[in-house]
Image 1: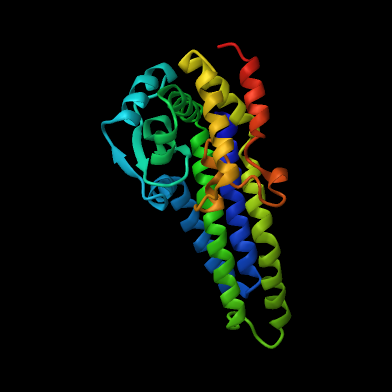
Image 2 (image 1 turned 135 degrees about the vertical axis):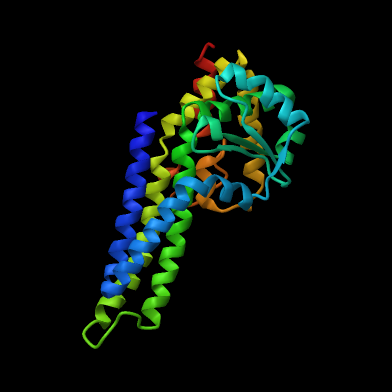
Length: 278
């Protein structure tokens, strides 16, 4: 948990340095704007990213039903307060947890996941998400998603500033051009670093903890196998910046993603679960 707090500080600091550094390419005024953007994004990432993420998915809170009952059953076993439970009407199966602390935790699952999985499989998935809440993985995950989304905004804003000559004089044109090129290079690199900041080892830990919570690894193994099979055949419509939050990374088939993936290969997760004795 302390490690996640350190990662959080590092991510927020990196965002501030990035904003100010890019802004400085456009002169003093640009640097001030960068500082203000950094402050706003840091504040928003910490306090509001979970709400933004749930809204991005059009998630609706539920207080009854199958998903709610399973979560209520598992929360005491996971050692966390009952989180808010959200349903996402979507034609793809996935689930995630969010919130900056166990007291502010929330879990969400898509309607397709519930339709295609048995109770034992859903229990495995929800136990995995509750494990993330217990270990405060959701803090770093939620902030990382907020920052990754902010980076896209920063890059676009400063590129438009360069196009319209903001903060540029006769001796400054080359600097602004360099700024545009730097944005094109830095933005995807920072996004990759943010994904890598979410340790793959955390997924293994959450898998093992899920098996302990439910008393068996059978449900989660079956759920992961189903997710692997379905996602091979279908696309995922949501933004790639939120991939680190899902129980299963739907974008892992993309180019270079295996090098920067936030999730271990599903086969390795299943192999580890088969060897683990709750």
